[in-house]
Length: 252
Length: 252
DNA sequence: AGTGTTTATCGTCAGGCAGACGACTATGAT
DNA sequence: ATCATAGTCGTCTGCCTGACGATAAACACT
Image (cartoon, rainbow over all chains, first blue to last red):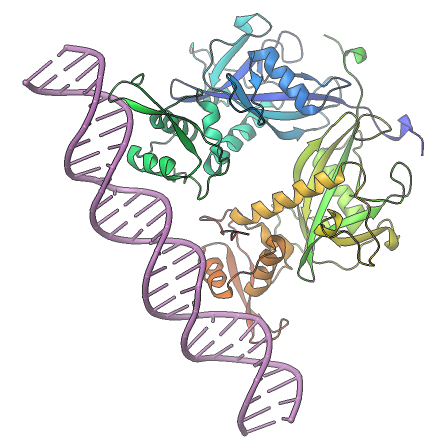
């Protein structure tokens, strides 16, 4: 059967990004302010159309680079700097999720270490890192006390799904190291877990767990006192990607 | 900004289904034979175009009903018969995954109890349940000994991803009950795990684990001897959807 | 009726891991 | 010198799992 354009309705396909990082002990997501209708002036997740010759993962990596300057961490060359983790999250295709037309959005999840101020095509006032509870409306108002409008489109749902994915995935994988700089201490890694899960973990049991899991952390030999207190050993992420047995998330 | 059709390339959006069931102690997937090019005569996953007014989940449920007659198990009305579990799996959008045009496929995963022979629009010879190792080419030939061509398009990858999702998800959720009839015994549930994981589990430890997890299984009071041997208690799936601590998958 | 086979179910025991928490170490700040 | 902060090493206890013995209740034979 030849290609029959009348046999199916045309769609626009976009990628949206849930970019997470840990700043000042809380889990933050990248939000951009919309400059045009619909939802003009409201905050949204970064994203854009998939180009005609582009893979979905390529489109997501391109958008990520455009918005943050981050390169995607290539699993084949894991030693590179400034690399972020990127994975597909889910696809959202409600017929009326965009009032203009039928848009299917393939959401991706990116995890990055703490970064300098974001840039959105050079315009800093139109992009920011915001704590996820703030963006999800669980605190009711933004940093300046102004009440925060909900995210545009269905982006609150997408963000919630991305946060939940990150929360569950650090349980059984070494993904939490994606929030850390290339070299980090056990305490810094623990603060990542604490920020993502919003819990307090016992430093001694955490230390025993992560240093006792073979392949998870490899010591670099160096130490640092950047967190104050006694110098701490520096580690790099080991080759192990799966954590078995998993890190247990305490009951709320 | 008004809707500008030149700003983005048009895509076709489809749903493809990985429908899994357990038959004769092995994990099987639904495959349909393609009646038209490309890949004419080859086996493929069932699927079809998303309609203009349809949600992605609706489209997947519609395709599932068309191919198998299964209704989707509504979480709000969990007592209904013949209900299958359906969830979104992942989205595949390589620019050249379909030689005809740019197609983005939102794959879904469906888990169903063992069913009578499949129907594909009434034509039984064009649809069948095949063991997944067979479809993934890990055994080299089909039921009749004829060598099996690989699945059409990128469906081998989609099927592999779906199988992996099912294998990992029954670890920490009550999803394995989706492979069972409404009432089932502990042994039947164990054989589901054994088929999906391709392992042998200790019946005594398995029994202790599943009956000791609160909310997982609720006894119906009845018993059955349909498996032979001593009569076994019948259970229904309890309200718990998460299994904590998870069922441990033995090392290979 | 007895014997073997099959499946279900209960119990016991040892090892491993996690939570709770004490103790000690090494730095910077006052 | 003293204190506050953070890191690291141990201990103890309880829970869960894997290994496996023992018993129970059906069916199929002879």
